Length: 309
Image 1 (tube, rainbow, N blue to C red):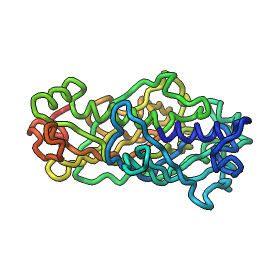
Image 2: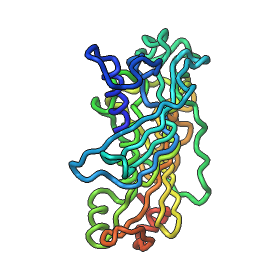
Image 3: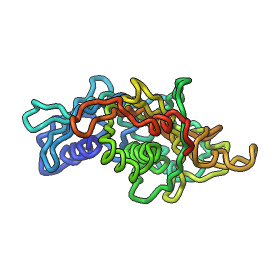
Image 4: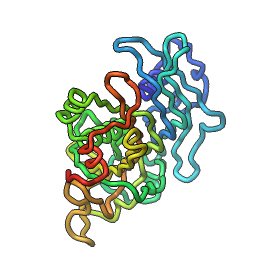
């Protein structure tokens, strides 16, 4: 929804018929340059949801002095704070702070269409380069692979899946982790248990310059993405923190064979990270709609890595 709101703002601001947008005459990346993408979100909190079929309003504030040219890459970037509310603004459904908008360097745009890059310093350096997550020692992990499809890509972003597509893959991984659609339905019907997302932290695309070391392809429809999820259970299962990391499945002539391990529980070693996020779930009693720690033991065992995938 936030991506669509920003895109709608860029369209209205550039419309020849005029616009009520206060950004119409600004130097904002989204109003002055096509081809921008949401590269990262620092923190997103979910408080409630709009009623089914209901109306909502999305407001965004461009943080001052954050619309600029990245001196290291030549790309353009800016940071927004956003929120979704009801029509009169009295109810806040969710908020997103530190929404990082990025645009690739104009001079290297054509290079971004190539499978491999001769210029290693400018190919993807406009994207964030966060450190891998420090995973708590109490976590258990699982890995699932997903093929990518055409409708999951952004025509303006040829080197990565968009962040919103990665978040959907993370959601599918969590669903599998909890047992899949049939098991989730069983948990709801027989145990009165639901799960809701309460926050997304440090969600980001990741610059993957190290891909130059491998014989592989860029992100195109059909490429498999591996998602490794490290799970930390808190408060007897009331809170479940999921450290999601998306990897390219690649082959290395130096190492030989697949770098990523087979699907199931385990670790991915020496894979190339393309995105990551920490997503927190809350267990909800389906009747009272209140937080609960009354999870069945088999589910706790699964989440804590006792049961196999």
